[in-house]
Length: 142
Image 1 (cartoon, rainbow, N blue to C red):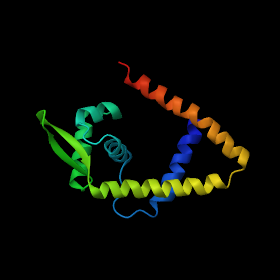
Image 2 (image 1 turned 180 degrees about the vertical axis):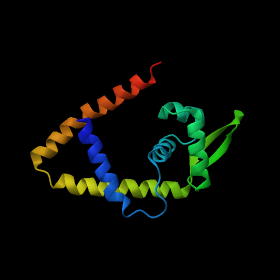
Image 3 (image 1 turned 30 degrees about the vertical axis):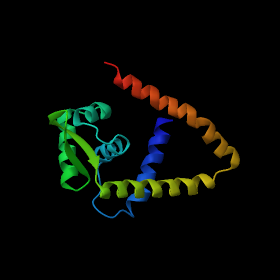
Image 4 (image 1 turned 60 degrees about the vertical axis):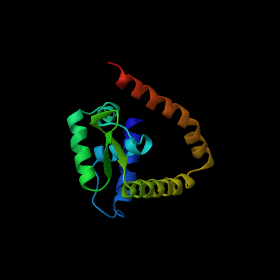
């Protein structure tokens, strides 16, 4: 199952990369941007914990993404030494475009499946979501 899911994700990325404008982002960069998209104002330390990365690794990613115009660092008013992260408009557009194109590609191929296959995918979604939650919860435990 894991191999199939990884294979699907890899094929989607390869299909969509060919039409990208701008420099290609690394996996960890995209993960950080998606995290900031869902949790605007997240701090570096919290982002590192959420992504299961070292704080200095996330700082390096933040520096690179800020330099490339994808992230804005704002000083945390509660702790002047800490930063709060926000996406730039360009990053919002890039993520939205990627998500739109990914949905269109997957939708096209799901439509080619039989009704029974589509029903099976719909039926599997709650279990796959629960699997993701339990994997995340386990990773959070000390």
